[in-house]
Image (cartoon, rainbow, N blue to C red):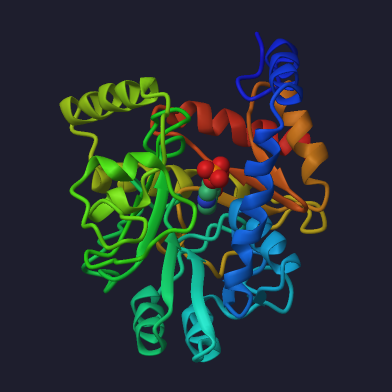
Length: 332
Ligand SMILES: Cc1ncc(COP(=O)(O)O)c(C=O)c1O
């Protein structure tokens, strides 16, 4: 089977043919580059090593175009203490700040970032926007936008983790009174009522940020999954309880293995209730261990020296115990 996102040589060849016959396409690409110019004096903040690649890469590229990016060390050695991340971000926000981009759960170590409401308040004071990447919270870690004081925040997330939607269904929550005029805009924005202001008009609410033609098939899959979740009473509090019980089982099993700390360590100072839905283990040879586990049928993720175990709700306790046993063998 082909990888769903791998390049298809037939499609590539066809596009290249079209492109060569159609110089207008290159004009379109070039005009996009100019759009960055108006943003030159913006300044962004985000957490260096805790943010997912989406934000890390995009900001690195915008930085090359002259944006100032302030990064804060939230994971790894010398990192800000887990309980003090929001406070450190609040301190860093000033009147040059255009936006703060921050995750609700750091994908690297699984830490839940507390105090996002205070970050939101600091942003409001200086007229900056707050965007929370809640991918690791949605459907598994409580994330009450209003209860957290995030009414004015942008929130992004998607379906291929704890929602079990599969790929292709992501979302953006916008603040209710958002009047931004996104520079990159799609014609679907015109599906709403448009006020004629003499400038490019935008649809109301989420239509402001609308793109254009997309493949809706994934949405039908997501709807079917959500219906299944509902019929089985699999709501977020239950899924959180299942996840916490699974993590506890893994933690107990891994501790009982008594692995040499030079090979594998688990940060016990981070209690379960402060963790998202996966366990991040410090394993200097994480890649090797992940490969050994995979050969035995255990799928893990590894980033640098971090091995991540993310049990899904349909994984049984016996399977988790088996995986722990195989982890013991893989670290010997
Ligand atoms: C925290 C976080 N944000 C975003 C994404 C995915 O973003 P994208 O839609 O850019 O692939 C992931 C996926 O693993 C993630 O873990």
